[in-house]
Image 1 (cartoon, rainbow, N blue to C red):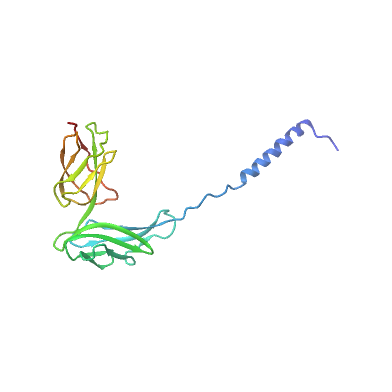
Image 2: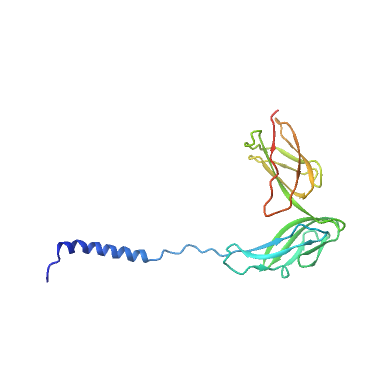
Length: 217
């Protein structure tokens, strides 16, 4: 049997190593934990143009390519937390019975959605009630001030208050949208500031109010 040449003896181990590495590269890595698509029940109510409220419900998934999405308004169950204020005459169609706040509760297929909230009145256009985010800073407009008391002084939520956190933020819920109101920002060591704001209806995310700047005494 002819002896293997020096060149062949050197090349053989290299070829074997390359073959082993190639086979390892073809092995599939263990699959990570799979994500189970989560159905989301969404409720949309356009800004009312009359005393009644018209809403739609849809089922979507957090992974767009998973499951079927679509309108479920007719198949959903519609109720309100305050039944004496209004009633649903058809799926998604809320009609006022008396003046008062009405928070929607919608359910479908074991999924629930709470909100939005409206101020109903048989003689007036229904109005969204929505929260307002406040922010209070030093006069440098960068340093938040904690412990500031925001108090509504006029309008639908007169008397409502919130206290800012360490970053200078707080919020007050159930503000009447499209209504201008007066509020104050006060804290010992600072001059009390009076300001006016107007709450906006929900448009995906809350629109922050312009920041309030407090001046030290």
